[in-house]
Image 1 (cartoon, rainbow, N blue to C red):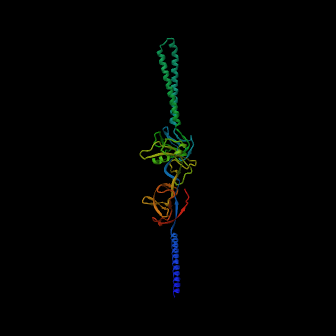
Image 2: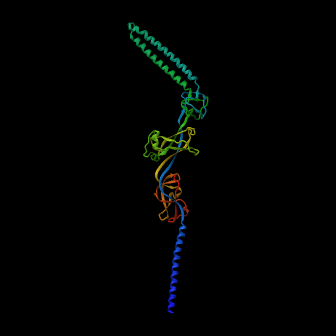
Image 3: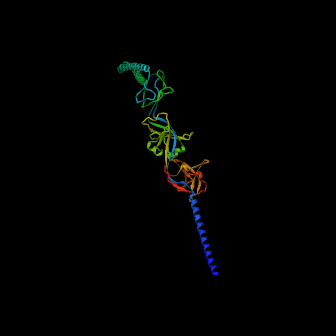
Length: 390
């Protein structure tokens, strides 16, 4: 009986051991399966690996356009406007006739001046003859030299009167020439407020027209003192800059037209005002643009775009930024793959990226999407992206 009992006890103990080992294996397998299941439930979100790069920033300035040659055509003499040879908006060549003022009064004035000159020349001749006739008499002591000196003085007066008369003739010729008003340069004719038959004078408030040569145009604009110092890297300014020197201080500029399109030609800043306006705190600049196709006209407006390249700055995609109460935040991924919200300070825009001034360092991982499912400390499965750099 005792032998059978011992055998039964051994068998029972063996079964218990087997059951215990099976229970342990089943428990381990259950934990492993649970861990795999939890990992599968982590959010897979795209993240951006922060690094330094070169940023391209653009600043806008409103400008007004003027022709390189922008001349007010005004009458130099008074008279009745007799002819208008051109129409508003017409292109004219240098020396081409524009207006005609009635010349009759000036032609008569010239005739009168010529006649006066003839009279004065005759008087000069008589005075000269008087001097020549008195010289022998004085030499022979027939008369005193007082009469000769008087005659010589009269001769000098006659010479001066001839010169004065000649000046009057020249002035009359000039005034007669002023009745023909010609183009001082090539360009486009502006508005013509006067009409044939109107009296025109030198003191008129309005010019006869404005002639603009727009084959090359100037765009005048202003920028703040801080912007100017930023672009010139030290604030060096001159009343006028040659093109080569200007390009070293101010970059080439682009022009956006009123319809939103970009002008095909690039411009260069070629003149900078010598001082900052105390009232506005701004400084005026001038950019020149070629205008071979006459797209730009006097009086147009546009927006100047000035570009600047900034190497070695931190860039993050704009989609990664969250605006909250006038502050900007991003979600970063910690080394243990948990998200944390972090405030950042921005320093402008470069294409589709923000330039980060403070808050991030190279190597930080920033979440790009899925913000509505994130909360502080949430573990995620980060998927590093390689977006195209602007």
